[in-house]
Length: 163
Image (cartoon, rainbow, N blue to C red; front, side, top):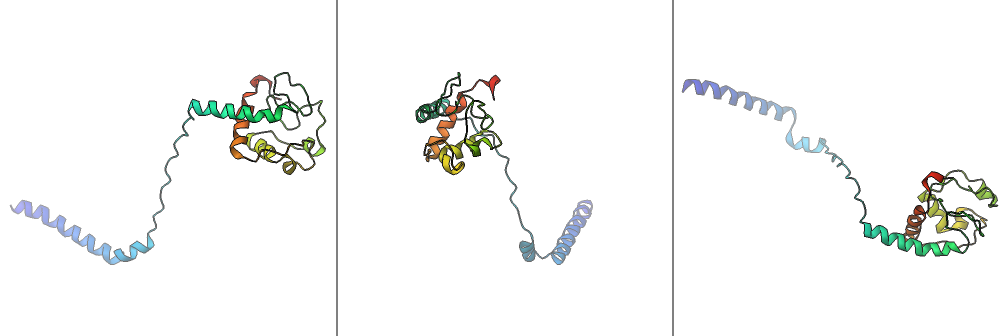
């Protein structure tokens, strides 16, 4: 019994001493004010692929929006020039890429590519994006309609033939 007492008593004594000293050095009520807990950001989960049905619906809605473009632009692989330049492989293409089309001066001087964001800005309000553009189309104000149109335009591509 003495062995148990001499084994347990010193550990209780050391624990009590450590607890007392820590409370003297750092008062628990003050510690609440100085300790700030920043939440640890959770790992972002990979975005789930949208269901195929939604992609198909967005494509169909985009194809419907593209009818507005067909009056002035070719959507075919032949890249025929109509009133405006062809839109085949436009997503990811260099701006003012069609060499035998006479672009407005401001558009001709634009650098960069037609990524989804740039296309969306242009399609929303062509004359605001490029003042005095030759494109007379007023634009597509609805965000969903523009998104669906760009989804459709992304399908008009020959990956080996990006200009």
